[in-house]
Image (cartoon, rainbow, N blue to C red; front, side, top):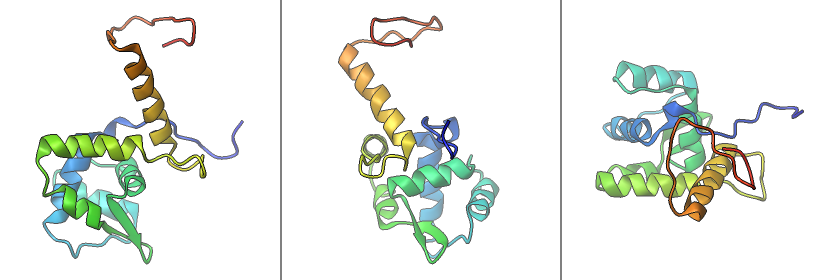
Length: 142
C-alpha cells in the first residue's frame, strides 16, 4: 500500500470547461494572487466558477497557475491561453494534461499519467463504443 494518497484519475471538477472558466476569470485581473488553494477556490466560487482544490492542483501541474512566494496566480501560459480560440484552447488543455506526467518524477501529477494511458488505449483501439456495460479484453478489463 502506498504511503501517500495517490490520485491517478482526473477528477470531474478538473474538466476543461472549469479550467477554461478559471483562466477567463483570473485573466480579468492579472494582479490577483491567492495565499492558499482554499482562498483561490472561494474567489472562483464567488465569481460563479465551479472549483475545488483539484482544479488548482491540476492547473498548477499543467502550468496554468504559478506558485510564487507561496501564492497562486495565473501563469504567463494561462495568460496566453485565454487569448486563444476556444476550440484550439481545448486542444491545448488536452496537450498539457496528456504531456504533464514526467517519468523522472513518477509520483507527481499521476492524473496526467492516468489520462495519457486512457487516451493511448482508446487511440490504439481505433474505435470505441462507450456503453454502461463492462467490456473485457485479453489485455485488461474496462
